[in-house]
Length: 517
Image (tube, rainbow, N blue to C red):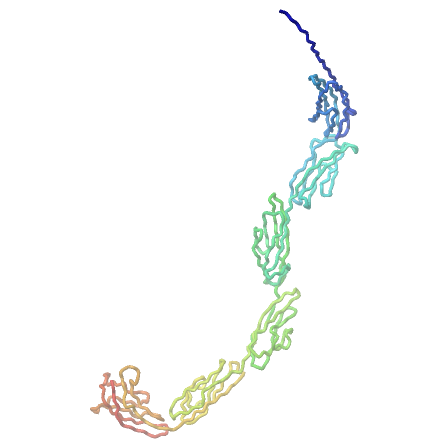
């Protein structure tokens, strides 16, 4: 069996011819914006691919493009139909003009640094105009510039305008970062003063006000050096007669090596020389003239007792011991002080023994005392153990009035007191009836007793066999119960006593006493 069929197949045949023009293909200055006119037929919905020769491409029908550097560039169009048919067209673009590269010696600097500016590979340049970004400029190439301050932004933007002629100039710029390191400090004195001067001596406390630093070197002018951010307090002293000026220097360095320093003076004036008279002593109620020298003015303290506290030679009449301090002042406002003591001898007080009565031959301990260190004088000297002591022993044989006179150490005052001693003439002689020589310190010795006895003529003691075991003619000597070094037995002993009185009579007595053990 046979059959047949016939089909019709249409074959589409496409063709394309890339075609474009540019208004200008040659320029003597850039940037250059090329003006493209695309004349290619769009019958087969072609796609477009433009290669501008400087690395730029585009796919628009009529693109825009700007050449930013001088040179010769092939501008190429490749047109492709929907079936893939391709066609290319091209044109040579020539761009002229000046060209170079901007060079700086540093992009990170310290305040005060010098930066060098230059160009590399210059081409077609006849005019240079440098703007350093801080208000300064130059038309030299190469050139240098010093940056002496730090802007608030922390950086400058230097730029260069370079031209082949006045009608074609190019612009380029860069950035310079300026690191600010600034040395600064203040100081105050230990008394809180912020003055840069002191009198005699001062201790300075430092406040580091530097900016941007991370290392510090202090030179204090007094021989000391410190590397701390906040240094130790420093002591300054002037012990001479001329003004001393200490120069304090702080040098700082930043972490990129920026350096700055500052120097400040500190003046120490000498203290004015002051001289005062020696300490003096006066009597209560009298006065003395004080003397001082030095400086240009003087003030005394306290003012009590002074006739003129502003005088170099005031009269002082204090009522009590007073230390006067003189402060003198010089033309620098410095002062110095010294003190003088005025000892005032007060009127001494006196108290002494009251009047008393004694039996003739007795002793009495007189006394006198004062509130001060004084000398004593007793009169009359009759019957006294001493006349220049405060507490003499008196043994008058007749009624006597004693006078004591005390005199202070300066001899300002004599104070008098009296003591009357009434002497009674009474005469007796006796011996105790017993004694106990057992070594207890009580009644261990038997003595002759009595009133008005001037001298013991005889005191004899006998045992029961009539043997004399003790005898003496000394009123102050008694029997201790020993005979030839042996203790005598408890027993009754006989005695005989004979004594002379102050009245010239002789008294005698015989009797017995007991020795008890």
